[in-house]
Image (cartoon, rainbow, N blue to C red; front, side, top):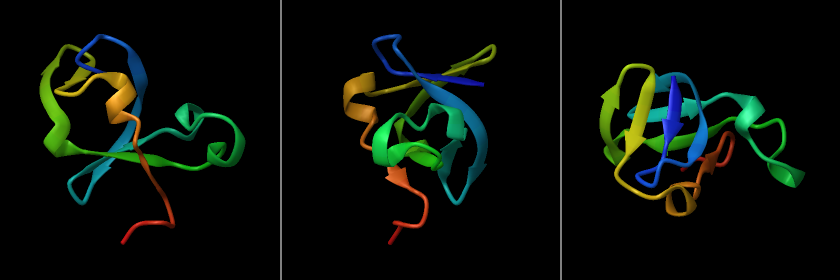
Length: 73
């Protein structure tokens, strides 16, 4: 499923949901030090799901404050 911000901007693709977080596929991890890592978005940010899309309650530029695997508290 595609994850999009409230503004309709693509954020990533769901790999799976675990521990109350959406785990995005690695191909959506970005560049530089983020490349090759899974990133997570809290399910609390989900506004709705429709068809094959998950729309968040936050715009993409706000929602991309991802947690990186291995750096979770």
